[in-house]
Length: 258
Image (cartoon, rainbow, N blue to C red):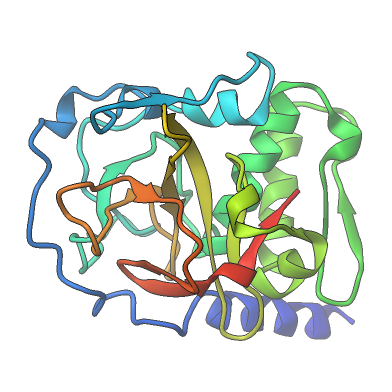
């Protein structure tokens, strides 16, 4: 049984976040932001395009939690082993969240981490539940302290991935997008990115930011928009078939919610 579980862990770690596009060969990003990213303090401080205002959220909401995540002054993306990721063109900014020292916090893991951190902060311990690909549930058990929470996450990262998370989440229409929703392609390979902030103009047009980790495990970062560099890092919410990020492509049917 032990060997079987270890084999599953190795399998999930090895292939959970590949495919679509190589992490090192995504579309090149030609432009740089017109403002210094080192002055940004959190996601809420990322400037908006003219005419847009951030959507209002209640203070206790998941969306508000995401918006207030701190950003690092250094926008370099590091891998779990301290090495610099070879592709440094995909990120606009880096979240100030530890990646750990194991190759575990990859794409779906980062999504689960952000969701779990919010629920832990809100003391909604009973809602911290993730399932593996066979339907087995992993629940946070008492005592509800940071050490036990971190150990729980390590177990979840090893046993759950894009395939299982895609089954756990619920499909939602692209134009019904909300902050905290996830573009996810479940499977082996697969990938996942999170909608981490949204804004709207007077005409009702919405825009959003995306965040990801990838493989190998690396800092969670805000993605640039390779399709519209002058609008980057924001993406326009349009009823497109495909959503092209620097390192992956998603279809509109791959948006899911909690």
